[in-house]
Amino acid sequence: MSSNNLYSLGLQDHDRLNNELGGGIPRGSIVLIEGDYGAGKSAMSQRFSYGLCETNHSVTLLSTELTIRGFIDQMHSLSYGVEEHLLNERLLFLHADVDSGTRQITAPTDDADDGQRKELLNRLMQAEAMWKADVIIIDTFDAILRNDPTFEALVRQNEERQAALEIISFFRDLVTQGKVVVLTVDPSTVDEDAIGPFRAIADVFMELQMVEVGNDVRRNISVKRFAGMGEQVGDSIGYSVRADAGIVIESRSVA
Image (cartoon, rainbow, N blue to C red; front, top):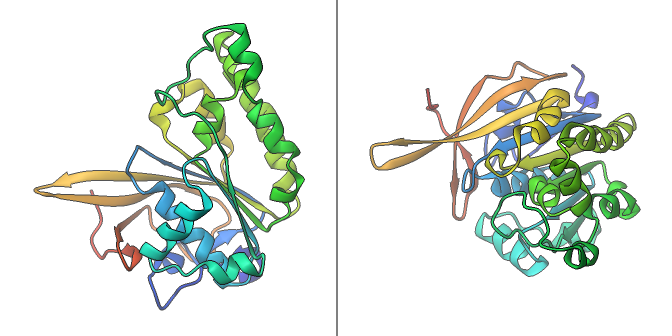
């Protein structure tokens, strides 16, 4: 595949992530990154953001956890100096103020509470400025699903798949314009029927795994699907997250 069809993740002199993923993320694709709490989803989304900006792509990063101050501090701790990209508006950082609560989909306690809560997905899709970038990253998408009262109502009616398909249609319209949408998800916090449609339509689907080996915790990117790849992409990529280094690709992988 021509490099014109890929958004390079850059930083070849810093780590080997771009090479391990075949030269970048295909244009016009939906990328799903799954992992349990602590697996490194946020670090991976931050690495994607910084590398894409370094290769002159515009990025929107929506975080449900970090404020702008926390984001800049986190990027510094990973040696990703992001201020220039923020100042020249190559990177748009947004904080989604949601109440994660118990990290589960739960019904509102009463109608008044339901009325006060934001319809997050609807507001998200209407936020035109965030969708102008080449790449839009939502970290973590499950927090928005869990805290949207309309989505919750459909869950209570066992209509999770219908709700998911409406969101997917919106994303599909975006990727037909050549944009990339990256979603990070903790699968333990959402119903299987809610996350299943996103797995099914993702052009790129990666699972971040953690395995205890002795006293060490080894991390692994399990590549479940990679449509439109450039060079060959392996199905298992060992990595670590290090202070002052960020994402580091390891020579070993987790079986």
